[in-house]
Length: 119
Length: 173
Image (cartoon, rainbow over all chains, first blue to last red):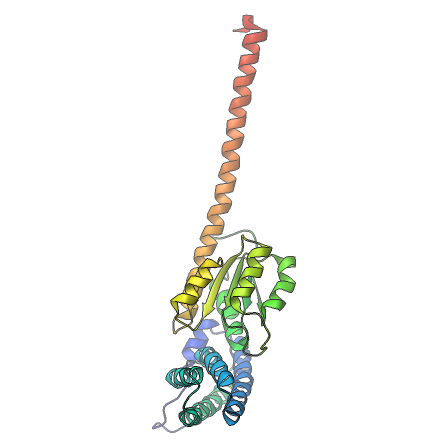
């Protein structure tokens, strides 16, 4: 990763949670990668189907998921998606936010895959 | 403060990574305590094990229907828990910073209500620690109560014995 690119994950939060235990960190990273990939797929499908209820549900739950890897950049994105999903409006804005969500999650997964080699 | 008895904690949370991370944090934070943590994705799964284990503490997510749409919500599960064992301490967890949800939770018997935020795990650990203090205090209060009752009964027995001697054998005194 070049110096000009900021990292999206904060692994210090995760390491503090498990007191630095390598096997636990690696396991949590694996679970995260699988879970977030599934959640993204569900949100992407919901947007295609303009299923606001599912968008709201998954935007809400992903806030907890991404917090484990310290991906603070996604909090405002998911908050906005959840709000718009609740009032069932502005699908185009949701699509824009979803692009940002997918972009940051992809970067996060790449960072996590690299970091996993240390454990 | 250490508890000798095993403390069973259930986490009812449909977000797998969050549940695992929370379990790890509890086990790390309370490494010196006899704590056993179990995780469940739905309230239904939790109640299947509840009767067998009778956990002292349940950490319960308010929204439990992300993965399984028909799963009971947190308040319903709270009602089930309280009906099964009113002594269980239930801490409600949610991302919604909503006073109505908080009031609803307390009305249905929750001991605490925590909003998931940046400091979520610190708040949860603090809440569990406070519950441990309450459990320990209650247990000690019960013990002291038994001691006091024992002392009172002993005194009553001695007084009764002395009275009986005074009545039936007054020449002794």
